[in-house]
Image (cartoon, rainbow, N blue to C red; front, side):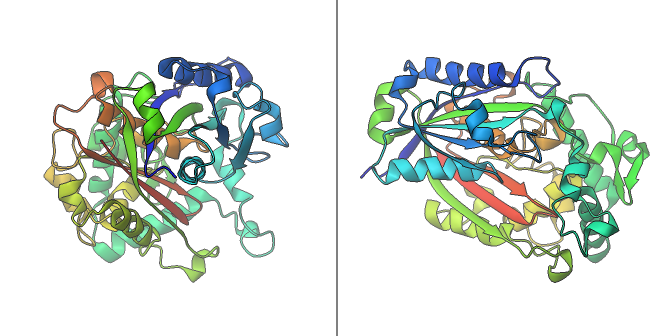
Length: 380
């Protein structure tokens, strides 16, 4: 059986609203990634999709709807409806098991045709206890942010700096949905959505079709000169009810530990060269710093104040602009993986970091206040 899985290449659509047809967008990213590798649909062993049926897709039996446009016709395949990094893992496992030497992973989210994310996530709740309260993802995030500010004495201005950093980084990303220069004062004065969350601290609703081609290490030698290797993975899920959870002690910490152990990482701040993390709300990037082991508890604000997570800092975080810049809800974890892959391949274009890169981290989260987390470590 193969000892390693390599990422050959990636293709993605831009995050802004598009009038293009769902199936056309799906076809184009799949065709692009196969063309980059110099192979055809017939050469693909298996196809794994990250997509949503009713909630974020509005399509029943969604994998039947797009399967032919996604190079999946008459192919063995599977679909997952949650954090899209799970689709990456499913594909990697099929290669590691020796069943296939190539796998096409796709993430699909036609955000412009979906209802607002808060309306959709409201229906994640149980209909008896939580739904009558109006609970949704932003509601849960506001509770988490209030607890974070109060328990750890994090300043709102430190959370606002995440917005300034990420939207500034997005200026160099041709695929970003929201990109502009803003100040901390701009963020602080933006509309209050749900105290203490402000409008500019919340991710937009974006488009997001993405394709990632995987191969066994042996096969990768024939398909690319710059393979990026899968080194570690970890995921973990918390309790469903918010009242059963400590919102500041998330499942990101054990998920990260599993990925680090698998990849042989003992000091993530020193050993990870670039990180792309999913931060649907600005304050969560600070909290995720802590849970990923980039700093101690209650130190996320100080870490961003230090400049360490800027593109020229010790550990650049979200040089693409992150989810605050582009938020295709279903496929955003795969977008993080793709951006790390491009950085390690040296093919990130204008947003390419000016340093030697050996190891990167991609993170995805799903559910209220980070109920589920997945972490992938990649290396050259």
